[in-house]
Length: 83
Image (cartoon, rainbow, N blue to C red; front, side, top):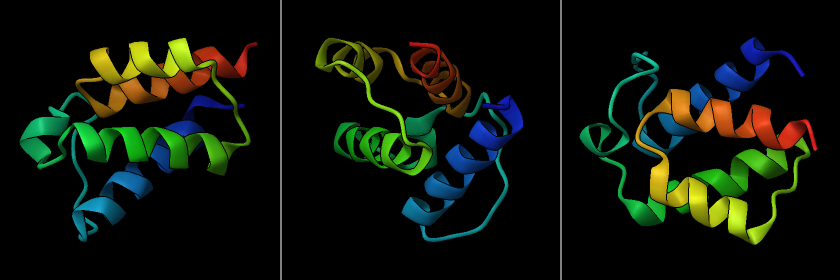
């Protein structure tokens, strides 16, 4: 899977959660964009479904603890895609 596809999907889902189509920097803080832990957890599950990926619970838990930016989410998705 190409990084551009993953990035586009991450941006689309975050914009949908924020109920706006504003573009934002990949390194923008998810918290500063207005997403809380629950939003990020939902986002991870939706992104996995959209991209046809499955992560182990431990991987999802690690991501939930460490995801700070859209770039972090994209990296995580690319990482689990390699499994």
